[in-house]
Structures are given as C-alpha cells and as structure tokens.
Length: 47
Image (cartoon, rainbow, N blue to C red; front, side, top):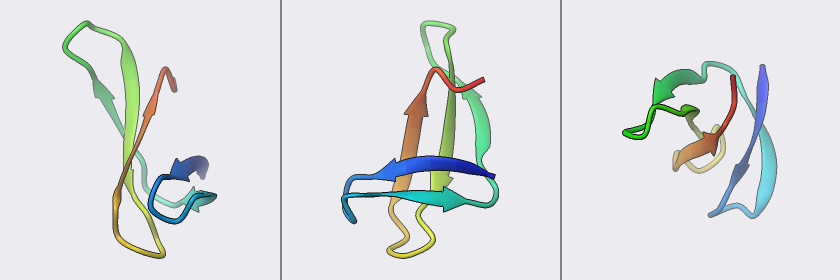
C-alpha cells in the first residue's frame, strides 16, 4: 500500500493498487484512484 495526496479531498490517502508509470522524460511515477472520491491521483518520483 502506498500513501498519496488527493487534491480534491485535500488529504493523504492509502491506495490499494497503484500503477507504476514512466513519464515522458523517463522519470518514474505512480498513478492511482482515490478510494473516497474517485479522482485520479499522481505521485512523481515514487519507485
């Protein structure tokens, strides 16, 4: 489990299934969906 910040809820949330992605510049990031409101969450630099 990973904790990510939801901009809509304005709080840190624990997400259950984050996806590892690579940005256009080659740096790692993580994408997930907020369990409360369903908004896309994005975290840069997470390995």
